Amino acid sequence: MGKGINIFDYYMDFEENNVIIYYKGPFMETILAKISEDIKARFDKDPLTSKKIFSIFIELAQNIAHHSDERNVFGENQLKKSGNGTFQLSESEDHFTLVSGNLIRNEDVPEIIDKCNTVNELDIEGLRKLKRDLRNLPRREGHKGANIGLVDIAIKAQNPLSVEVTPINEEFSYFIISVEVSKQSKAESE
Amino acid sequence: MGNIEIKGEKTEFFIPTVNFNAETGICEIAGESYLEETFEFYQKLIDWLTQYINEEKKPIIFNCKLTYFNTASSKAILEILRLLKNYQQEGGHAQINWFYHEWDDDMKMEVEDLSLDADVSINLVTF
Image (tube, rainbow over all chains, first blue to last red; front, side):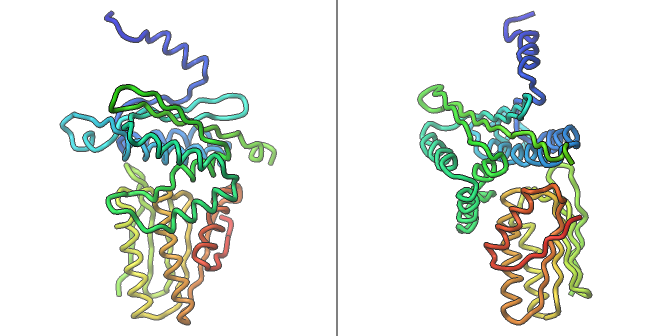
């Protein structure tokens, strides 16, 4: 055995934190589709929570696929165009936690922190209005999305976004965003 | 004019099932919407509806049965709703029915916001 991370420690860490899904690598569509299906199948007894987790996952994954500054250098086209990152879903007694992590350029840090702060200051009605306002902006050239992913995540989660930025070097920082989704009691009590 | 018939699939992206019928004016979109080229996909639907409105001038029943759509898709759906709103204002008949699961509070909220934004009334129907 060479050096590197200890797989057993890693495993125990995941077990203790009730990690359900952990993925690190290229955010390619084929993989995202599989993870989505897994999320849906796993929580089919609580459809609203399941859909919330699934929707948030898609928006987080798209952020990584489109904006992560860690790109694959392999030859295949599919790999080349997808950003690299990490996604984790864990469960505790009354909520699920979704975490995503990826590299970003230092110059992009203030804008992202700003966006998250704005989102966290708003209540649900304020978020709904912000989402509508952003959706009404003209489509941005060269962007595939509607630029409302973070707002939508906060609406679906009904919890604040927590953000952690760790500088790596002069060019890049590691950006982690996490959000909790409370378990819905509604489906069970019906 | 012809119909639009797209069979939905969920292999990589989630392509919705689309049936726009020029004979009956019943336009239905169902399934899940998360696409590689969202705007291009919906532009085809918008172009078809524009042609139908200009040439056929018959009533439209728009049935939305999407159970999931990402934020990029919602921007395109809003454009469709605005097109139908314009048709109504020009004297055309357009009815919008939105099917959702009773448990899906998020979808209900989303439809309320789309309705507010496009200033058009949407009938919410449970599956």
